[in-house]
Image 1 (tube, one colour):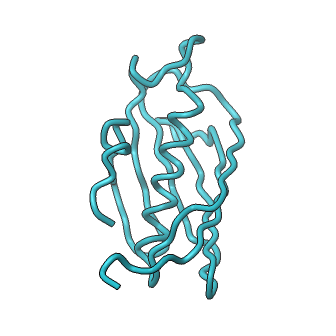
Image 2: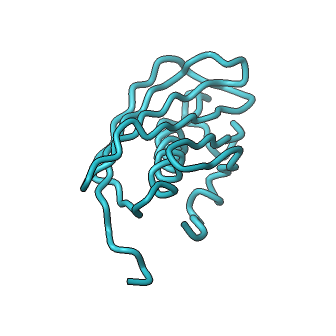
Image 3: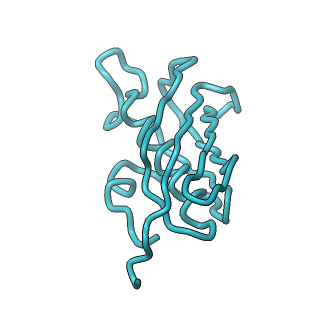
Length: 124
């Protein structure tokens, strides 16, 4: 997939990545908190989107996201969060990913769904 600079500066750390599945961790620190002292929703979206991209792009065709939605279930103030992404459908033109985000205690804090379309490989 190459280097995802935005994911790196956001603090994302790949724990596991294989075709159809990825786990990515993000530390919860001052740089990703919102005005209420909780993990910023945009940071959580970035984490989930990156995990989904890994799970999708490591399958047979490279992809580009076409949509994504997230449901926040609980606030996170400290520790870390882990996104666990699964490619739930690998079709001829589209892939669909489901991502669960858990906190350091394993508590489900958000769910993310996305779709991606196949794109040509950079090398042709």
